[in-house]
Length: 208
Image: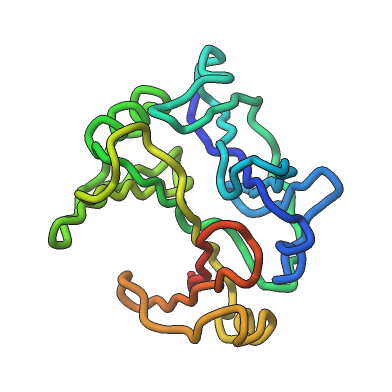
């Protein structure tokens, strides 16, 4: 079996995600290549943002468990579902996970998925570790900083790949997204969707 992240569960407002140019069906699924996003309802006192992930190609015993704090469900592998997003989104580039203990979270992810830590990057006091779930699958970026309180890991934000970043930013509007700038990855550009867009978590757009 090969592990795959089928979708990320995001507690938020479906209409807010539709407003930036993403297709969101009646069940809350926004189909993307590789890993999709599923928008789930938010209760009055419930948290917003990424509240879990659904994996395939892993042990059924993981269903309903936490992988070092990351709520995990298990499903069967699914055929790709394609959607023509006005935003020009093609897939998820990566998801960011905050953790006070990078090695602990990395070991938990490897134990659940069989996908080992690829590399560690250090920028001052910040450390970043990278897993890729499955062949050519979703990149999970672990971020550890001294100010992160002790406790379990938590999902933080995500980055969408878009076919034309300038067109995507024009579609959303300068009041809801930053101007494109050079990304850390050489030759790529990135823009950040502002909190006012109402997505409920940090989201960035990046060139492929």
